[in-house]
Length: 190
Image (cartoon, rainbow, N blue to C red; front, side, top):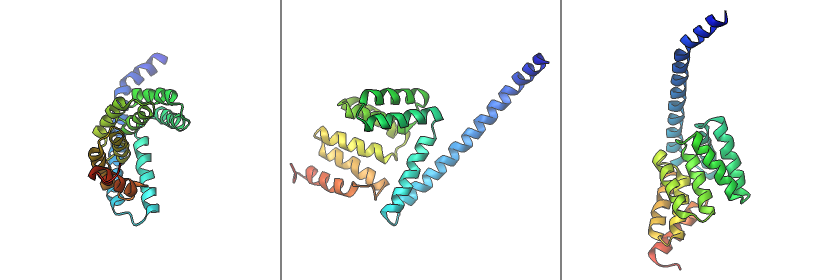
């Protein structure tokens, strides 16, 4: 009886795996369609409250694409980052990327940990990967803008911030930062 059950399971395994793969692909397509719709709506958000809700949903979808274990690691890493335990945050984000190397949000969060530790080169590499995976990642563009500003590249920082604002016109603090970067890039601020 056990042998027959084992044979049946072995015969069904490819079919079950294919069904799971199709289901995951459909979920990914639905997530991408929702992201596309949210990004279009974000550009026309009538007020900051609506924009903040859309931003929250976009961020949630970026995280949802990962496995539950990855989500836990990202949350723990974010807590460690907020608590300024950067080494622990970096470990969490490293582990998340082992599990989900295609997660733009994991790359972005690890970039933030690298930046907090003063490793701008590693942060820039991680941001490059985050933006390769999700070119609309406005958070990664803002982080990149900050790194560029710290590196004394106000024109590049301005371009990155303009790209973030083009995606998310109501980004909290974005317009003020944009004005400050314009002044620096034009030489009016020190």
